[in-house]
Image 1 (cartoon, rainbow, N blue to C red):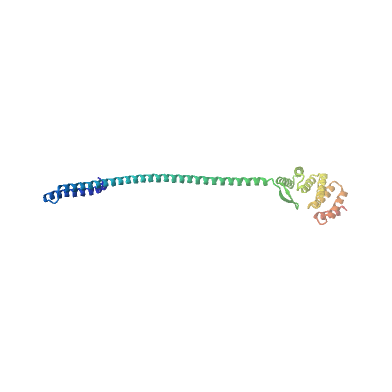
Image 2 (cartoon, rainbow, N blue to C red):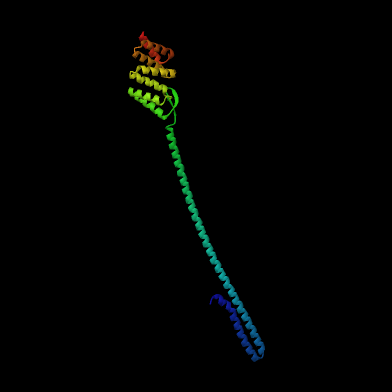
Length: 271
């Protein structure tokens, strides 16, 4: 028997003891003449009713307590289940958030990689384009735009000339004029082509190219040298009269040039 049951039956026991005492008292009173039999029976019945009513009340209280306890246990179990479900939901949300953070971080890395590749590709394209885009160059005091290939071909032909391979230099400069007829290098090419032809003893062609330079750019820095070279070619062709005329014109047109000083010396020798 539980403690609660023992406690709940304690009043019943006390009432039973009281009833027994009353019986004894009634029995003695009969002998003593205090109570009669009817009153004693009535008192006993009343006492029994009170004891039964108290027992029923205790049993009802016990049942109610048991029902309350059962409901409390059920509520507690339901609460535990609810807490477990809530914890499971929280864990699931945390897992989803962690997965989402991982996806966001991966996406950020992917975007950074794409941006880096695009930057590298853009730089590569820019570098390739710069190889083909015209750039400003200055040759013989003249500034103009030239394609990279154009500048490369001119430098290559000039390098051949400076090595002393005049036939190859003549071929290179002629080829340059054909490839780049509108080139800003044109007048300089005429000068070096004439010099290569002079070295190759192709005097008539040399004179033609030097005259073309003077006609196209009479103020060209190398124009005085071109005029002096024409006179040299004429001397090689045994045309002293034309050479004298060319030297006199050189002194008149470019009096302050070094070529004019050389022309004066040669005029003096021709007299």
